[in-house]
Amino acid sequence: MEIALVGIGKIAIDQHVPAIKDSPDWDLSATVSRHGSVEGVPAYDDFAQMLAERSDIRVVSLCLPPVPRFTYAEAAIRTGRHVMLEKPPGATLSECHALEAMARAHRVSLYATWHSRQADKVPAAKSWLAGKTLRRLTVSWRENVRQWHPGQDWIFEAGGLGVFDPGINALSILTEILPDPIHLTGAELSFPENRDTPIAAECRFHHPAGAEVSMALDFLEPGEPTWTIRAETDQGVMVLENGGGKLTIDGRADDSVPGLSGEYPRLYAQMARLVAKGGIDMDLAPMRHVADAFTLGHRVTVAPFDW
Ligand code: NAP
Image (tube, rainbow, N blue to C red; front, side):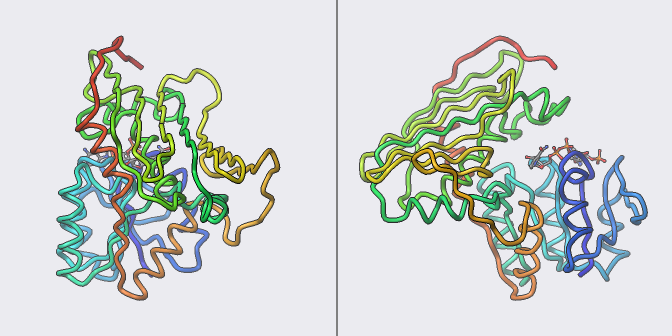
């Protein structure tokens, strides 16, 4: 299938372009970006023009930051294109509900991707936790924003989510692997005095069986990143590290080998399946927890942030 990639920046170049090029399902037939392009691929800087001129392209993958994404998604769906959304699927929950309703009305596929859910060990973590009694779970998601998002001012502008941009990856895994639903009960959000989004956060959650569930996010981790979920249960301790890439049960590493390798190849394989059967995959649970943190969170002002 012919696909157009929109918003040629860091994640498009790092992950989407190689995943599409290596996939048997997709041909990268156009890019749309104000500055970026991909060698050998027809490049547009006007989305409406691409949609009008390229009726052969039935699928559009949007890799823009969340705030500008809705307008693009709306235009694509209204012209009958199937749409794949980078995470988070929009700037607000209402936008995402609107897109889903629009996709149903236009009978096109819509996929809210959560790349971390496709990490190698997420399925094994999910099946290990099934049927066990959770006692305590801690998420520790710490990285250096200067290393992982250099110069990306949008992340500190309203709608950019700040430290919840990586934090939502943890929540996408958590909402996939936990057998029971949780909900946020409190949060402390640290906002740099010159920015609109938090640079650190501490969150607490209600668990139906009374387990202690908490999450610590930090964007100023100086060294190697920590992307870890640790779960204590009645039958042992599970540690999921490296953003879902490494799983240890009671100190023993899980060495199961998943089939297709790589988060983004799995996302594009899933999009191909959705388009083939006309499906919609729009799970908003990770985003709901982030919205709850912004609703309930106690705000603390901290030192200004500059790159
Ligand atoms: P980015 O490089 O800052 O932005 C991607 C591209 O979007 C930019 O190069 C720009 O291309 C276009 N763009 C930016 N602002 C725009 C606007 N207001 N209107 C239209 N186009 C605009 O960001 P990114 O790191 O690729 O992240 C994009 C999305 O992917 C985010 O939702 C992020 O959470 C997600 N993501 C990022 C990573 C990562 O490691 N960076 C990992 C996984 C997921 P032009 O200037 O050429 O138009």
